[in-house]
Length: 136
Image: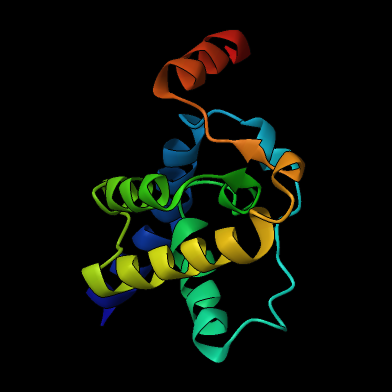
């Protein structure tokens, strides 16, 4: 029993440090400053469920505002989701990845493609590296 309590206490103390270490390497992107939620009340039930998976999984590694305020093509979203699935500790299964992609593609077509100037284009890895250098 004492061993179980020690494990729980250790996890409770170290998990915040691990999460802080993961997020400290991230750079703040312009998209991070935008809205952090979407009104999905008019979305189909499957997309509303997809939004929940998207928020749950994607907010583990970066602000949820980042993908909400970024516009990409369907192919770019597919590559992006696959890339995120392969990040250490993402915890995104193939099924969840498909759900997230389906939501992002639907949201892109439904919300972003109607007013693309209201959203930021995705940044290249080189552009992100330049932002990192400027912020440090």
